[in-house]
Amino acid sequence: MKTQQNYFKQKLSLVFSMCICILYFSAVQAQKKRPVKKAVTLDSIRLSDPAILADKKTNMYYMTGTGGLLWKSKDLKLWNGRYDIAKTDPNSWMGANPMIWAAEFHQYKNKYYYFATFTNRNVKIDTVGGNIIERRASHILVSDNAQGPYLPMKDKIYLPANKPTLDGTFWIDKDGKPYMIYCYEWLQNSNGTIEKIELKSDLSGSIGEGKLLFKASDSPWSREKDASGNDKPNKVTDGPYLFKTGTGRLGMLWTSWIYDVYTQGVAYSKSGTLDGPWIQEKDPITPPNFGHGMLFKTFEGKWLMSVHSHRKIDGKTVRIPKLFEVDLSGDKLVVLKPYTP
Image (cartoon, rainbow, N blue to C red; front, side, top):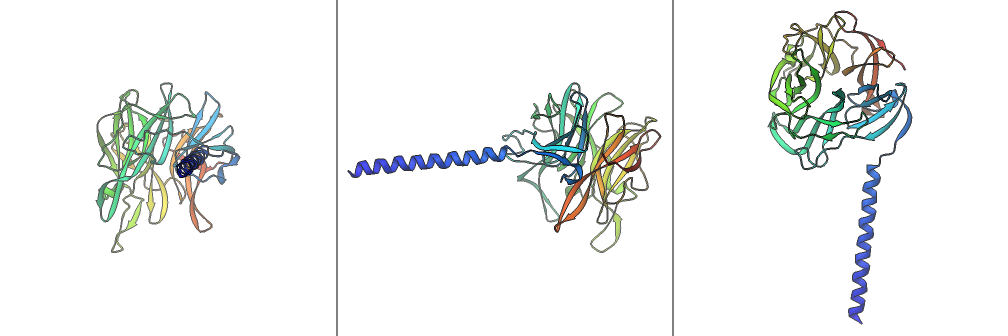
């Protein structure tokens, strides 16, 4: 009798365990199926580092940024999202659940590429000045479609494993070769840099080593105070983005700080190539509290710049996407006025 009772207890325990597993699996799947919001206005979206692709194949605007998610819109006014589109390899250096920062879309040779920064918080690569530096690097995913999904390519590493890099972007230089332009983070070198590295023809990996383009301290406008209160150049480089003016001049947006105010400036290449030398404009290019900008052209032919700003809501600092009209027709990029779709 006891044997029979033990048998039923074991069966009941097994069934209970299976039910728990099924419930857990269902909960995980439900988390993966993120609810999609419909007809959301741009100023109600919370998003850092917004990057927008105007995709002519689908006549749709796609927006991404920090978080590795996607919003889409037909008119820049109302957006649907958020969609999970970045698929990483859990067996790579990124780990099972990497943080994703500052993602951008780039269309190249009939493919769509997702340039982003991935951070594995479980891997520590250095400690400098009391700051523990996590494994972080700019990387590229690929898709046949603007909406993804974006998947890993052959090479698992584009940039050195012992250096924290971020905010990678894309440019084809005058030599016809593709490059990633990225920041080498100030946390390790104490004076953030913007660098370039050549990419393979299909962007599936990098070639050679990175090369310095300029340092944070080269900027005449970014400022901070040291521990003694002395004024000095700010050490942060953030969000590079390349463009050409109407006269063919090569420029680069990039962001830093003026003390505690997030600020975006611009530099121009004297040679017209990535190798520069890069001449920094004296003054910032956008109003205070706007930065990490990129440029895109609407389907109607208007050039816009997307940036984010910081805002306090219920005691918390959030980041809000914002659009500005810009003029690229002359020798310099000119920011005109806020754009309201």
